[in-house]
Image (cartoon, rainbow over all chains, first blue to last red; front, side):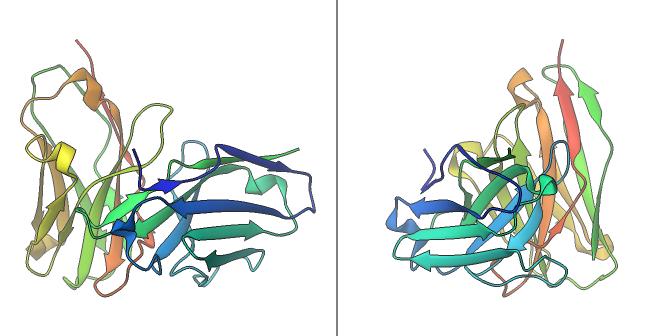
Length: 111
Length: 118
């Protein structure tokens, strides 16, 4: 059982905003300040979207934003587009080996 | 930085296998390389990580002893190795890279599909 929980699926219409949550269920994630988000399209490698809760790598659209409240981190996608469909995973630093843990993933569908 | 993985493999149960992940573009050893398993239709799962600088290795407890993670720093290449494959090892394996001191993996290999079938 993962130390992180995510909703199995989230959907929205084009142009809308959606939010995916990632809740830490174990104190092994420490302060939960090293949370990152990855998107994976079908049959492709994951891509980093957000790191350290709310930082965007260069080249990632500003439609993606991250936040955290207590033991729940969130990824918000604004102005939903068809290309945003895919599986989204949160990842956190943890005190347990091997030092990182993924959430179970959330499937995003654009209606 | 680019991570380039070795090609797809088809093996029989009981066979051994070693797949690779070459870090090109930056030949410094200041990176952690992680191996991530994705079984068919399932999510991402960390298997372990290795630091090029001193070969420090950390494994997911449930996989310790089942696989070996190693590295050749002279060619900045990481490896994932099995001594005796099982059908349940069928998966896509990704390597991911993180600069030492960062707590996120921003570089990803293209994935290696390993199929284990009799």
